[in-house]
View 1 (cartoon, rainbow, N blue to C red):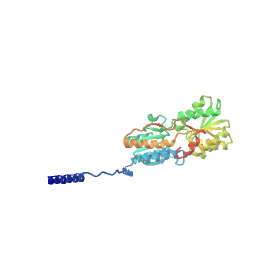
View 2: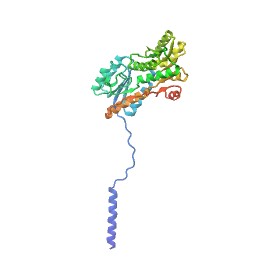
View 3: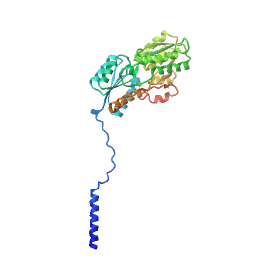
View 4: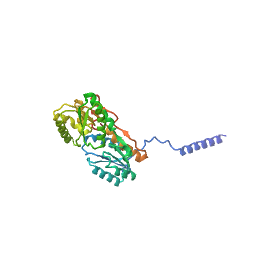
Length: 331
């Protein structure tokens, strides 16, 4: 009996040893391996800014585009059109020839870029616009979506604010300088400002300044000297808003200034009271979401969406300190 019990115990022990040997040992928790971007397989996106590289307004837009490219694993190429439609078209044609995956561009002319944008779409390239769109939106251009500001709405907003704060009334003359009067953003902002001024019987006169701040200042001074009755300046672009305080100083006039966009000089003007308010169209968001939506479309087939990046926000003395903290990197 003892022999049988001994044999049973030995067999049981052997079975436990065999079972233990065949059971996989518990695996220690392992952190997911770091994902290393394969540059060769990254979506290639060309972003085209229509001005020269020196224009301060686009600093946060470029930052936003770069941040989005890094977050989404995109190979980003930033090009500049120098305010010349023919140069921007050359950049577009090069991007198409290089078979990039996506293009983001400023459609600041209603006819100049339509053919090449449609050519890119037909070639399977995703295309979105930012900052300025065709005046008819998707009905006027093949682009998939637009990330930018509602120009007539914000023009009306700054016009109403200037009327309210400075008593602009019937018979008053308001100068509305802008870089390129024929551009979509200029004509649509002007329409909004004019609507507000028409409501009180004031007159708006538009002048072209170009994109260079020094030249813009000179042209504005010349206008003011020739029109000393000017009641206020409502600038329709960042260049002229930046130049306006020095222009009125040079012309030895004390008149109200309002406008569009943010630069360090505009922030200073708001702080010292020379500038009443400016419309912030949030260029960082324009760059960030243009690249992000292209990446999502290229990778996952998600169709890009229109985005109003400017809303109806004004920067004035009540909030300029917060804005200053993030200008020019993000604001």
